[in-house]
Length: 277
Image (cartoon, rainbow, N blue to C red; front, top):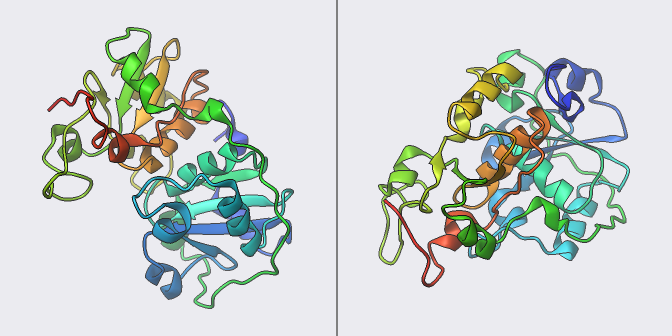
């Protein structure tokens, strides 16, 4: 992992196994349902539900500082705690990295390979729920440098020095799907005009770990996504694009990357915006 621009943002499964009982570390598992967590999770991991803890009812990301503080506090996290993030879905941990950085949490790492690699190595799993004493957590104001809003995205269409990067599935990009299924009444599908399509899963090895620096660099370079450009990744609700922000900024060292966390959930509902299929 030392070849990445900032290898300190990753931990491997052996490192985590050696630090399971470290009181200054809190492990977070993130998923869409609590059932996988209840069945088996990394010992000591606290569960965050994507739909109830991280998103609002309209599927926008919950960026309310008070809500974030409550989530961190009930998870037993202080401002000095090192958070290790992972999920059963590939790339979830890197999205949580972005979210914690938005609120100014300093010490956060991503488990390289996530739950998939941990389980494949027959490492210990737990079924009992992890609970910790509540803390007094204080979030910083939202770091606007990590986000891009829809008006700037719209102004970037056709600009040669900017890349709108669609990291959804091909079915979503082509307009066949709205999120993970065909569109229902009133749902608009397609992509932002001129957006480059590069699905986020292409950055991962079969075991769920990140591809090497050179492999990632060649992947993005060959699609015209180069460090001299400003890159605005987007997806459906901002999670997969938050993951891509992490890959570009911390693994490859791109200087100008901001996550469009409103993503297609917002763009497709805006009045008078262009949609391409």
